[in-house]
Image (cartoon, rainbow over all chains, first blue to last red; front, top):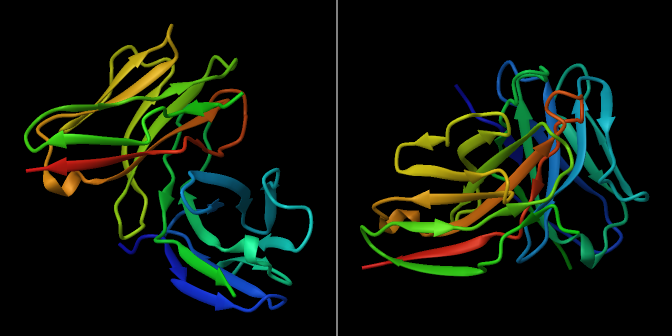
Length: 117
Length: 118
């Protein structure tokens, strides 16, 4: 039973380029979350998606960042025109569903380390 | 105000000893969940233990236990019989609005770096 998969594991981009980070949730999971971890800090929530829907994007920067979770295929976090401050580890997590009485834990992927030069 | 506070940036413990990692939280929501994750140097996030705000008993998972003091808003992680492999960063996290549709996002603390010594 494969866990949450993220690729690439490491990504180097020059300032101004685009970065695309992919996340395949665990089998049977329909909820995906993206978090960012800056160096020496904890994880910060960015966005929460279900298939074809953005549920909560309160943690997403207003510009240059976008996320999607299409009906088929992985979830994509896209960063346009990257800047040095975007250098961080980006984690994806998935959960099987949201039921009011059960706080499903989130299973994390190994992360993508983005370095902007 | 910080929702999750971890005041110990670094901790040392001798192998086979017990260690407590502190976590305090701030929420006005009556329904919430508290989580602990381990992040070894390889970088992945490993779920350790969960405590719900309405749970009557403190959570335990093997060598991990959660000392939940609701009135003090603290959720300290206790690791018994420390092993060298426990050396890692440990994060406390909270999910609010369990029964009010408050979403499913986790709010993390800044972490505690634990080093287990021989």
